Length: 263
Ligand SMILES: [Zn+2]
Image 1 (cartoon, protein in one colour):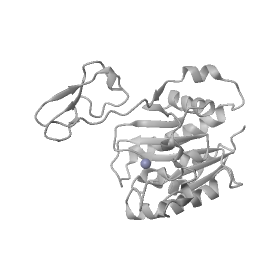
Image 2: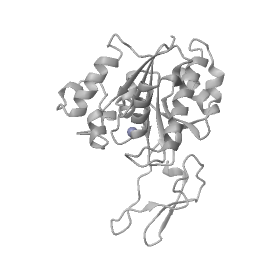
Image 3: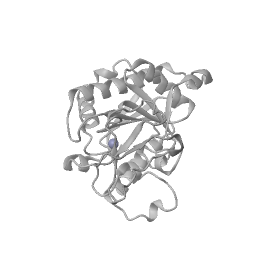
Image 4: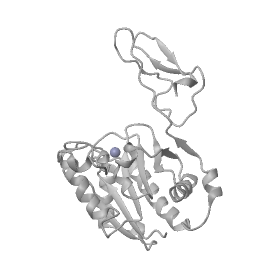
């Protein structure tokens, strides 16, 4: 397949304004894309949530794209209606099928530039192209699950969800906006550089990725109070954990150390 049509999405979460800012900017000034011949469409996914400054109105739009038998039976929330409209307009049955989706998100966590993908050859090649060129970028892979299939970007098998952080909700932050802009433009370069028909298994095998392998629940102390992330770990994403490293701490100083079997 060739990638010709690209959908750039912002405001899937209404309190993440970096993507909202860039969509508005690019619709006024598209010089960033002057060197590309792709057909580009911009989508502000949840304008009402953006106006309210909230992640969502009724429920999380980025969990409403799971298409199964129960989908149509769900009570129709604001986001259910939005998801159906977006799917009808841009999904695989729409007739205006988009080959690639870029969904722009931000995080309050220190995630740098995180490229969230489903692990397939085209996504991996494009994400790896970006990772090699953009400082602070990491590839984060999920296994296919209801969680990943309910994301907006699941409308196409070829998609990258961008998470840039840390930035507070409802903030326009110059540094974060520039990082997101660089990431999106690098994805465009990656799409242009990668030949989707090439059998480039080697570059996929060598791509450095972080795989989601499980969650570690917060421990509860004997009084029922939740422990906190240990300060040695705060803001330290994408670094290795070693056996015995402090993981959680209680207000009274009780420490839970990392042991491999927790994952
Ligand atoms: Zn988000």
